[in-house]
Image (tube, rainbow, N blue to C red; front, top):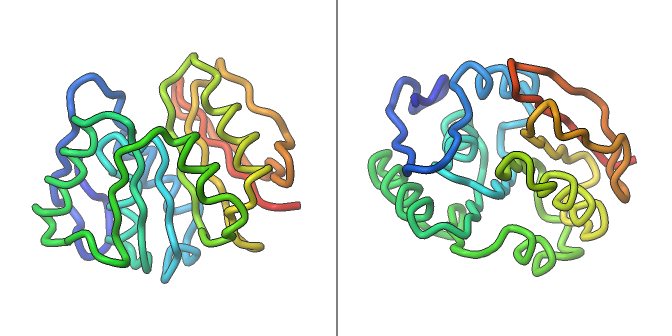
Length: 182
């Protein structure tokens, strides 16, 4: 995998074994859709895997990123990728080894993130559970966006708490759903 644009364009991202990494062209499409919303954004990447979305966001000018994954291999891969890009965990960048659902609840009512990426394992209803919790936790800013990657066979609701679906796109078996506050 490679970063598709920004200051780290073409840099290789390593992924741990056993995950389904988001294809470069899908990631590029998502960021093309988001456009200028990346600049200075506070980003949360849940079920981070390799950290590809968050690293791409940082490359494109995001102000900060929190990576969350419950796999030790994923956390190690994210930290290795940060090191390769000469980025370190500071106030602007954090890697959390924990369950994404638990972290969402912990951040409840902080309204601190402009972009939230979630890419849970397919076919486990985690995307739907995560959206529901995000809608209740209120950790998204008023103009923020939640981007959920899921299987096209895993239907997500049009509404999840305070979140409303406003756009979706399919790429083979992968569907990307975009939500914002009502």
